[in-house]
Image 1 (tube, rainbow, N blue to C red):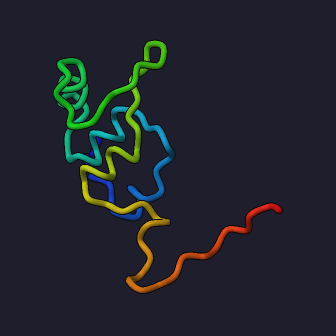
Image 2 (tube, rainbow, N blue to C red):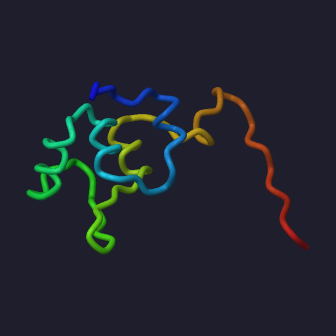
Amino acid sequence: MTFAPLTRAELRALPPVIDLETAGRALGLKRSKTYDLAKRGGLPVRTLRLGRARRVVSAELLQILGVAPEEDSMPRGAAPTPVPVPA
């Protein structure tokens, strides 16, 4: 299997919670190293234990990688689209 880190576009398209393998790819780590670090508490992001699975919150991962989420990456000076408020 070929190891390929995630691109910025792939990072921005991540769901809210991802598996350890995907988080490792984003960090440039191979699968075995990612699981080893997670087991020892050495990943730079929190891991969530959901049953037997471990997950990572994508927002935390993006933050430590310095990648702005899609909605935060508008050009400077651009006004955000107002959200209608029910009366």
